[in-house]
Structure formats: C-alpha cells, structure tokens
Length: 65
Image (cartoon, rainbow, N blue to C red; front, side, top):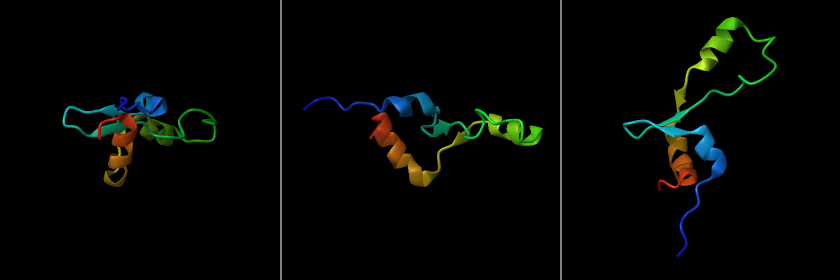
C-alpha cells in the first residue's frame, strides 16, 4: 500500500506543539488592513489553537492519524 500524502496546504498552515496540540494563525490579517483597528490587528497577530472538533480533520490532512 502506498504512503499517505500530507496535504501541502495544511502543512504550511498548521504546526504541532510539544504537547501534541495544533497551532494555527488567525485569518483576516493579510490585506485590507486600513479599515481594521490597531487593536484588532494586534489581536490577530497571536497564534491560536485548533478547536477540538476540528482536530481530527487537521490531523488527517497532516498525515498524523
């Protein structure tokens, strides 16, 4: 049986933490930034964690499951 391929888009967007959680970046930080407040842009800078209902889907895309 062939090897499982990792989804190229997913491997660029997600990273594993040391405890096995999946880190992600916030959306809406790439363009059309003039109408967003400084506070909003600053809060979008920080990384977040993938929600527990989406973890299994992301792990499958990353070839971890």
